[in-house]
Length: 193
Image (cartoon, rainbow, N blue to C red; front, side, top):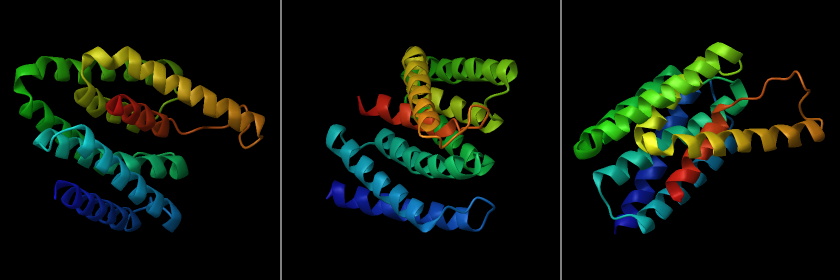
């Protein structure tokens, strides 16, 4: 019963996000909407099999819905909408409050992620401010202990895909590549392991 409920909720959440984005300047095409919906449903089901139903599970799954939309929006428009970052942050705050015995670990995670990604933003000008904002919420979900793992997975994934795009001549050396999708992939990877 939980699987059916979570699958339906994931689909409804993704439909709502798709409709919202279609009313804004960051409309994602139909295929990307379908991919986001399928990815979302699959991950929700995997989470349900790996973890007992709880408020934490629901919050992480809802965050995943937002992140799957961010993945496709940033890939296409090189922007992470403030509305999505705000919704993600609210979910992260509720997650921290629901895990009050570990609140310091999760709050430090958000602060450490902000510090690291903020420094990268200021020093290199290669990240967008949306990436920095999103990092706070991701850090609050992951906690301070996963910062180094997160950075390693994010930058390795970004580097491998960038090299592949250069070799395939899909991007030029001076071209801009959205970083948000790699941040999202690293978050998913760490949550699933």
